[in-house]
Image 1 (cartoon, rainbow, N blue to C red):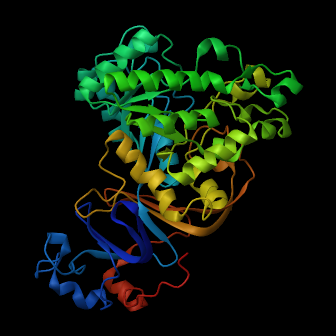
Image 2 (image 1 turned 30 degrees about the horizontal axis):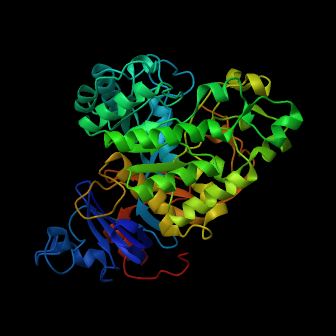
Image 3 (image 1 turned 60 degrees about the vertical axis):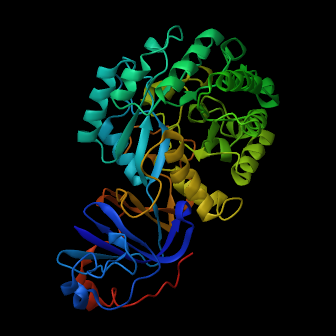
Length: 482
């Protein structure tokens, strides 16, 4: 299928694009992304073929591609942002072993509904993803069942036990894009040193859940004034920071790529800045919930278990520091840490509830509503949710460069909606954002040029001749584009 996405605001930081433009897809790949194409009716251009016989941009030569030809469809994107498919570098799809919480199909559908075209799933499954056979099996199963691309993060240690590094060369050959013991820290420094050395030799980044277990033992929320007043056991910010400091030094020694998962504390960001200034290959992600909520909100919510996650919601000062870090370029990616749970895991007192919240279907809307245009420009948001994650994990997406797979997200920045967990595609309902009124969401998600999600009332591709008859393909109007 050939698809001409016309009249939108094209935002692609990887190419410096931000303005009115068109996107042409052919054979499941990007054929053209750039300024609006000539406005001749597509039906009149159909006989010219595609790409242009004069050596258009799609063919690598000068000039413009001709989006005519048999089978061309046109999608009217006026009023929409057209961006590289969003990538979530940190999700829990619960396969294998906990499919009562999420399946590849439901998690993939949730991702597509949130505008994500690819996700990276964590290895804390049952059994863990610590050998090549399991990694290859999951990759094949996800390709068959999930609506989006699923990349596998393998275990950093055998059995996630933190005692012995997993076989990294075999894991990479099976398709793993990174290694991690996410959900728990690698407590022993000697083991972590070996993990970093082995991963560096295999060319894999190490994704760290930074938590010193003795400092965090028994904690349920951030150790601060709110927890003290409520008599809740606390998890101090230093539990995160001391592990980040240790791992930065070990990564420097090993020459390994280190990625800090779900940073939550101001001191953690200071350490990452220090590491980057020193030349250590470190990257860091933050989550929407840590950017928008703090420990005071936990108390205001009556210590509802849906406000319990790990790392916990920190102080207001920590939240403000995270916002500064996404604005000043310290933060490399925004991830959801999507962690669906069965209702029984949260239907209990706060200290006893499972850690984790879902986020695939709310992340984009939350960020558009509360962080765009300040402190984040639309281009910076796309960088954090597409190009940044792709760069961290070495993935082919995050760009609209001609020739790459056509993973594309169309966003209506003015679409108003209310978060209703009962409408989620995910099996998880554990969100602290239920009832929040939001502005902006994905209205169409394409993977390899194929529509995998379209919001009710969203844009529908039509045949070029029909588009011309409607006048949609014969205009370059961009009024209303935000």
